[in-house]
Length: 211
Image (cartoon, rainbow, N blue to C red):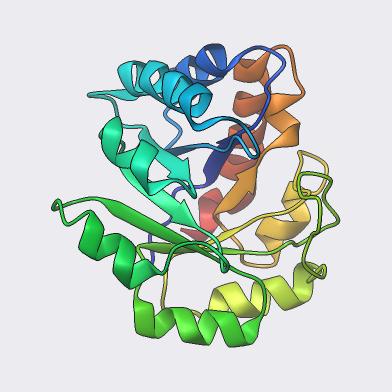
């Protein structure tokens, strides 16, 4: 059964700092926080991951590490998120067999979503919905309608990603996409808690009657 939780926060170079953003996520009850530090030395990623693990430990916020299974296992994160070109999902599970760990997978079109059903990740990312500057070579933009068809048609828990902010969120929610991933809208804000709370308010007010 699909899980509905709303905001999934990805942290990449947040202006307020990684720890401040993670603390804000815990304080506001964000379900998932993903550490995404592309093209940085693994030692640096590991240091940040350890600090975020201390903040999220024993909270309702699950710490996910982007791409790097070694970092995820070293800090005993709650899970790892894999892209289409990263480590194979089955191999990742075999290398990290601890019960309860979460494995997420990026998908960018209908064919990848169908393939993901056979792999049965704990959730899939679907996008990019809108143009995004967070990737050097982004996949083709899906748009709201196409992304919504993929999300609504999938038996997997799905999280829309790519260029989502407070202005675009209502349209996404009205299209039936209830889980959404945000990066820049929080990471570029010097007050991450205020940014998170605004997104959560929009989510509650828009879909409250629907679920």
